[in-house]
Amino acid sequence: MPSLPDGGSKPDHAVFLIHGLWGNKAHFWYIEEQLKKTFPLLKVHACAVNEGNKTYDGIDVGGDRVLTEVSSSSRRHV
Image (tube, rainbow, N blue to C red; front, top):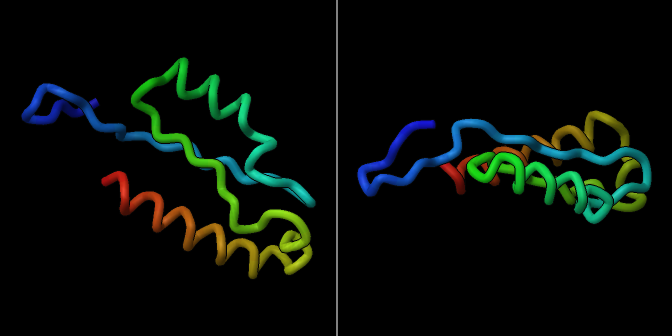
């Protein structure tokens, strides 16, 4: 991982967790916790934009929403 001037490091890898039909981001709590514990510098984000019945909107609409959430999350951590 790249070092920062203050001696810290910033993540250079990210994992975005995306649930299936009728899922929600809370379903990933254990996976997210374990990834963060095992890889402390890894950016882990459970997507929430397609929770509940929004999964019926179709892959194209849901995919666009996930793209927006991933882009927003990525900009905050760069």
